[in-house]
Length: 344
Ligand SMILES: Cc1ncc(COP(=O)(O)O)c(C=O)c1O
Image (spheres, rainbow, N blue to C red):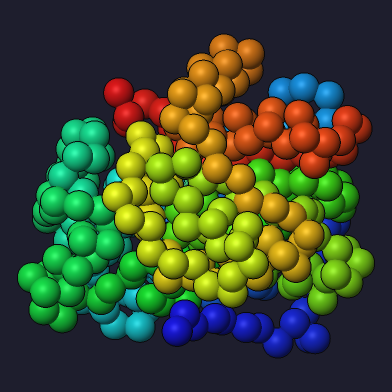
């Protein structure tokens, strides 16, 4: 069962105005993070730009993080806490971006890192990890198999920072929700489209909106409609949502070029479903060709370095507009979760 970190927010006095003079990293939200920046392992992650790309449509551009993806946020928090709590070595399976981020933050922390990725992950993800000095394993199958490989053959005594097997990655990821509200001057967008694999982005943002209500930044219960975007070739959350299930079931023969979405059995699938339902959002699957077209379209119209997962979210927006589930005039945020450069 995933663990969650909670804070005693009753005693916290923090307003949006207090943040104005703080450095532009996720550590500006230190009151709601597990440790202060002075003690953190950091590469100055977070506070990525929110770029308007059409009237009432913004892209939250996570490609601008260290190692080129939102995974930097979670790993900054997780590696910081692991080091603080005495870990001597770290490991995790990954679809690609989390491995690069873990390797970089491990290097920054001076801790040895071992990662395992599906063997058909693009080469640049492997090279990136080696560059940071990590031990890298290529494993047949998906991230599920990579996780099993590490549990059976990984270094003994290395602390496992897999998605939701420790609570601090969520703490780093939730800052995306704080940034949205800060960058929109206290407003809450109507809809957030998020490409979902393990689901930490969604789960983290849902937590952030609850915390912000407690802090008095937003009204209680206020949150955007979360849209979980998956690839048609691996859509356990979409299937769980459309069948009314409380939990996700493992997806057989998962396949997509959006490697971050190739997570057939997310540990936090049930938490994704809760976030979607509680926010009155939805879940939608995108075909590979639509994803590819949308990636190119968004990049060409905006100049943003779009990854296939971000392209999936962009394609999903067009589909939701076509069915009337997103209406004209609603304020929409589309997450581009990483750089497209590593996929080539
Ligand atoms: C670029 C990209 N987008 C989205 C995801 C999915 O993220 P999450 O596990 O938070 O659902 C990943 C995960 O690997 C990713 O690398």
